[in-house]
Each structure stands twice: as structure tokens, then as C-alpha cells.
Length: 167
Image (cartoon, rainbow, N blue to C red; front, top):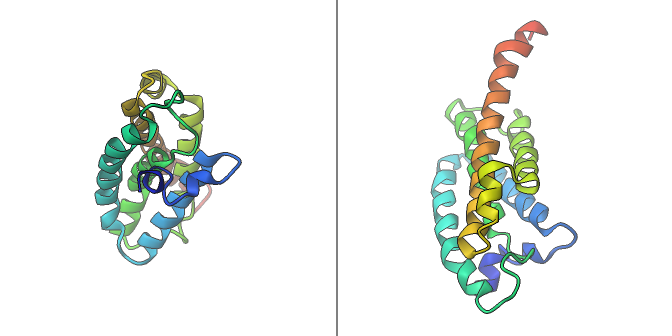
């Protein structure tokens, strides 16, 4: 059961780049939720998956020399969903389809993967912890940074670029 949880239903077993597969699975599930009108559940799922990850990851890596195996993607799911909350919740609030506003799915995905791979500042600090909490925390920081940056980019587009283009 622990392996199924930390691999997000074995998505983390896909190769290459299991973290990207985990993030993509999270985006697709969030898009389905949004299209079903259930976006309000996304922040609840972020909390639930985060708590589940903090419980399951230490059990999954106990006794292992590798403290952050690639197949563990529950952290990517939590971080990706956190990033998506910044765009999908406002889209839901305004009754806009995620498919009609597709950058609301793509931009947080790309930014999250960028921050997760690049590991700037607090993301890298959390990753360097080398423990189960660090496995979860680096992706939560990456999700927060990606979400905030996605909001800033959306604001710049709608307030500056779109009016300049006559849209």
C-alpha cells in the first residue's frame, strides 16, 4: 500500500522522468476535476495528499540508502496541485473552462517542473535536507513559487499584453 501511495498509483514507475509523469498525472486529474465543476476540492486534495505524503514517504524510504528515489512522485502531485490552485481556483470562480484558458494548466506545469529541477533558494534548501520531510518540502516550495509566478504572468498578460494587442 505504501508503494502505491508514494508512486501515485504506480505512475512513478513510468520511465523516463517519473517526476514529470507524476506532475502530468496531477495536471490531468486537476483538469478533470475542474471540468466537472469540482475545482473547490483541489485545495482540499493538496492538503490530503501532502499529509499522506508526509506519512508515507518516511515509511517508503526507511532503511534505504536512497533518500529520494525517483519513483516517489506523491511530492510532485502535492506540489503540482498547489501550483494549479493559483490558476484553476480563480478560473472556477469566474466560470471559465480550463480548456478555454489552457495556459492555466500549461504554465503552472512548466513552471513547477522548472523550479523542481532547478531547485532555487528554499526549494534547494529543502531538497538538501536529505530526509523524508525534504522530499515533500522541496516540491511544495516549487509548487508555491510556480503558482505565484503563474499568477503574476497571467496578471501581466491580462493587464499589459492583451490590451496592447487589442484583445
